[in-house]
Image (cartoon, rainbow, N blue to C red; front, side):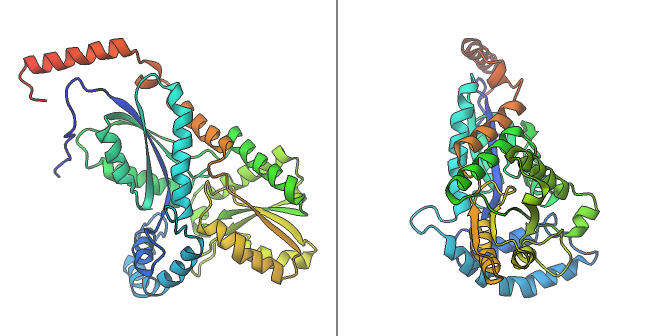
Length: 372
């Protein structure tokens, strides 16, 4: 294998800490062609869809059926939430603002250079391109923060795979740290609670608060994935912060795909059943999503809203994701600062000493005939 050279390196150049913020990603446009590319990348990830022993069967289903039927429907759904005057997909717009807000909070705690990049697991900007951008900026230490509060193989581990796949091509590997979950971080729980209180100050307190998380197949849980447990831990801590009893909130799982059993209860089935149980006033929050996207805006705010009202519900409201709220940015910055203790640009940096050392390195390299 031919490893990629660090072509921008010069003896005596300054080093930096890099912060890579990642999320799931979006298609490049709300079109059938763009959705086909995006869905192929997404559904070909064996972390997302763990194929049966006969892997050829899944490839046949994916390429022969799904990619010929689903892109058009998905494109229509994306078009309904697309920002035609902005950057496009809500997730990407919000992610860019999140990175900027995090950077504003983290930079003052570093004495030396610290750089920030956004990378998406699927679509653009890619994780590979973000890592390459950090390398070009001289980052010899990189911390990765996937914006998935609850660990799951299909999200967090897949992000780790993408990071390491890119780094396997590099000759010079940076020092790495990877934050794999923050589902019980106090500042994250408090930000969620504050968003609920603010919503209820306007809309009142409902009979039931539904906490809807993205689902995963039941076999993933059976095989040891901790995601289901992490979701319930977040919900319990959030309920405690709000002073809710077990009867005042309910955990559900959305975005079911395919025919196999997924972790339950399903959000859509719950929406259809609640009015018949006398629960006709609900609010829904999605604590596992760090930014509003198709699954929250369209699936919860429209589709599941409709299920609930058509089944006899009377009052439904969706509580927005934390997005780029200041308290959310505070919580994410706090995570990065917790995990960068001891790194040179933060805790061991002295500008004058650093410059003197870099000058010495450059002089010695030139004396030995090094051209760079």
